[in-house]
Image 1 (cartoon, helix red, strand yellow):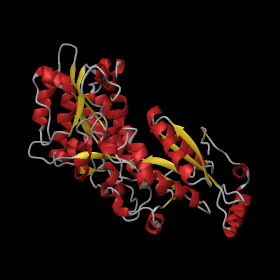
Image 2: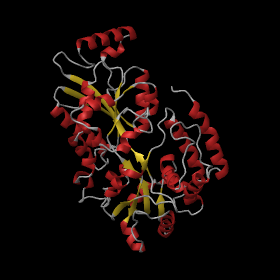
Image 3: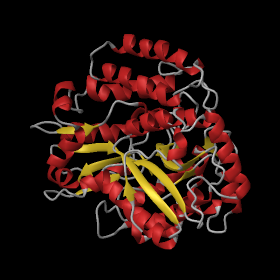
Length: 438
C-alpha cells in the first residue's frame, strides 16, 4: 500500500451542511460503516503529527509496516514541523469540522481539546484490546493523559525527561569528572564555570517553564498554587520555589555561564553544542538524532543535578495518539494506534533515536539502549522514570506556558529587572487560569 502524505485532507462529505452531515453519519452508524469506509470493508484514516525530518521518516516507516499488516486500512500521513503548527492545524480543523482521525499531541497541550469533548476517550478501547495492556506502559506517561484523573484520554507513545547532554571530550580536556546521578547544583555550577571562557560557555538552556520546573521540584517547591486546580503561578513564593527560580536566573544574570542574549540570538545552544563550543546542553531525547551527526568529539548524557538537601526530579516529555470524537466508527483509527503502540511499532520509532518508548519492554531492550550508538549512558532516561513529574493538564495550560515563557525570557536575559519581571509574570498570567475554553 502507498502512503499519501499531504498537508490537508478534506473529504467530500465535509462540505455538506450540518443537518445533512448528521443524517449521513447516523445512517452510516446504523449500517455499521465508519467514516471513510468503502463498501468492500476498507477504511481510510488521516494521521496528523509533528516532527523533524528524521522523526517523520520513522513515522513513515511505521505506517508502511502497519499497512502491510492491515491492508484494509489506508493511512494518509499529514505531518507538520512543529508543535505550534500542529496546534494551529488542529484548532482550525476542529473549528471547521474537518479533524483528523488520529493526531499526536503533547500532554501539556491536549487539555484544551479534552475540555471541549472533541477527543474520543481511549480507556474503553484499551480495556477491550487483546493486543495491548495498560501494564505494558510507563505509569507516569499514562497518568499524564488522564484528563479527568481516572480514565485515559489518549495513549502515550513516548516517555522522556529533561537531561544534561555534555561534551565528553571537553570534560576530559578540562580534567572534569563526568557527572553522575546525585550530583548537586553546586557541582553543576562549578562545572559550568570551569567550562566557560576562551570562546566556550558552560551551559545552554532555554528559559522556559519546562526547563525551570525540575529545579523548582527538586528544591521542594511548585510552579502553581494547586497542581490539579491551579489558579496562579507561584514563582516568588514559597521560599523553596523562589530559591530555585533565582538559582536558575543566576546562571545567566550573575554567573554568565549561559551565552548572553546577543550570542544566543545569533547561534542557538544546540548549534553551539554541535560546533563544540558549549560544554553542557539541557534538552529531552528529541536532541539525539541531531547530536548523532557529531563527528568531531564524543558526547554523553547525564541526569539533572539535585538541589542541596532536595530530591532528584525531572519533567515528563510525552506525546500521545488521540482520536477525534464524533466518528460513527473508530475501528481503523484504533487499529492504527494498536499497531503503533505494539512492540513492532514502538521498535520502529525507537530505532530513529528520537523517542524513549513508553512501552517498557521496548525501552529496556537494545533497540532503544543502542549500546553501539551515542549516548552511551542511555539508561539515564529510564532511571529518571520514577522521578518524572508533569505540569498541570488544564484546558488553558498551553497558553499559560507560552505566555510565561515569553516573559521569563525577558527576565533571564536582563531585558527587564528580576523583581519587576517576576511580578509581571504572576500578574499577567493569573487571569489566564480563569479564561473559558475556546
